[in-house]
Length: 129
Image 1 (cartoon, one colour):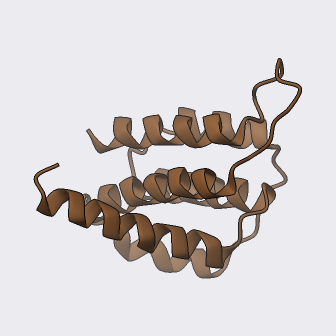
Image 2 (cartoon, rainbow, N blue to C red; image 1 turned 90 degrees about the vertical axis):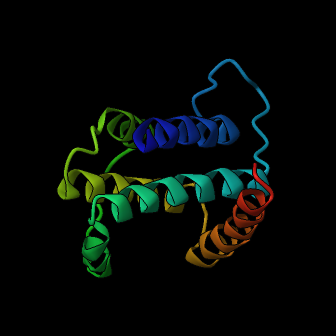
């Protein structure tokens, strides 16, 4: 199920970010790995949108006003979002992007990571992964 796959990938993204690991003193973030996990999240979100014909709503991202949310609030909202409608899907995508921007990822970095990971995934599919 694409929703479960997305939630697992988002968990892996959070694991790379390390913000929730209150017990760790050193939380050095590997930006390459963080972007790689974020690219996986985007891939599953887009696959879900295409499958359910919600991709036509992506244009709504052109005009965005961010809510004032903490990383913790964003994480909880993303995990609790049922992704049961185009509106819920769009809310989740916006929360993900806000999280990414709050941790310092840029649009350019996200785009580059997505295309790089997409090429890897296409090669994996071609090889029967």
